[in-house]
Image (cartoon, rainbow, N blue to C red):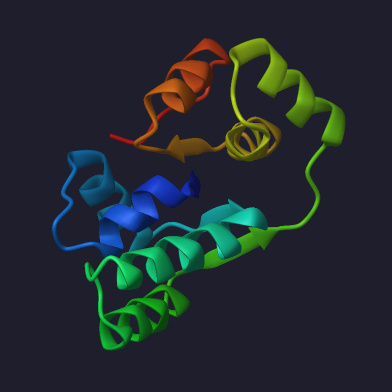
Amino acid sequence: MGFVLDASVSACWALDDEEDTIADVALDRSDVEEIVVPSLWWFEIRNILIVAERRKRLTVATTDAFLRSIRRLKLSIDQAPEEKDVILLARRHGLTVYDSGYLELALREGLALATLDKRLAAAAEAEGVRLIG
């Protein structure tokens, strides 16, 4: 079936000092299911990695290894958000436009959402979106 993956879960995968059951479940599911992300995810995850390098949480080598590992995932990058729905969801739930982009994608595609963000998870539940974990 597949699921929408947000950057918070991806960051948990990348950073050895972070652990979460939701991230573990999403990683297990990624072995057999397609992952769908909005186009902003590409930038978000790379920014997280660079900031982690600056804070000495990652090395260049571990960043490069992580980027190679995510290339092996069944990952689809969505390029076509519904602008009016993204804005509506941000307003309705007090989300950033970035977070509402993940929610809009999950709603539009009828997919579950993997997130560690409590506000985004609450908005997803309010909208009837299944959550991973």
